[in-house]
Image (cartoon, rainbow over the protein chains, first blue to last red):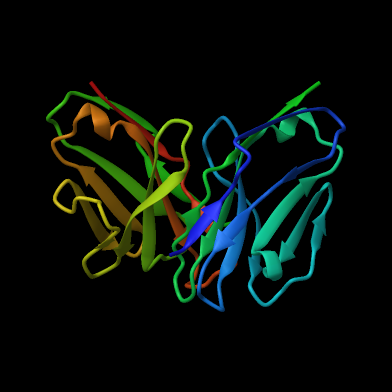
Length: 114
Length: 116
C-alpha cells in the first residue's frame, strides 16, 4: 500500500522560530516522487517542491529547506525564522511510479503568531 | 506560468439536483486531469483520473454513476455531481500536469459545493 503520514496535526509557533514539519511515506516503488504543497486559507494549493526518489540531496530555498532520507522514508520540511504569512496547512504527497496522481498526507496546520 | 481554472468557485444547490464543475487548462493542453475532494479540515482524496478521449479512471470507493467525468477537449474536463446530497458537500479541486511526469502539477483554485 502507498501511504503518506503527517503525524503533526497542528503546530503553533511564535514568529522567528524555526519549525519542522514531518512526513513519512510508504511505497514499494523504487521510483517515485515526493511533494510539498502549501494550502493557505484561500484554499488554492501552492507548489513548494518535488523530489524524485533517486535524489537524496537536501534542498534549501530561502527560508525553506527539505531533508529527504530514504533510509527512514522521510521527507521533512523546515521553515527557518517563521513568519505570520507562513500560516497555512502544509501537505506532503507521494506520486507513485509512472503516474501523475498524488497521494496526500493528512496535512499539518501551522499557525505562526506575531 | 501555467494556470488551471475552475468554474464555478462556489455553488449552493438543493438536494437531488445535479451540479457541473468545469476545470480548464488555460495555456497548455492536458491529456490527463485529476479530480480531488477535500472535506473540511481533511486531506485531499483523489477521486478520479480524467483522460481526454477515453473513459475516466475512478478510485476505489468512488461511485462512477454519481460523479460523472467528461474530458471533452484537451483543455477542459467536467465533473458532474448527480443527484447531489448534503454528504456531497465538499471542496472539489482539479489538477493537471503540463506534460506527463512534469515537475509540477497545476491545481485549480477549487470549487466549494454546498448541498442543502
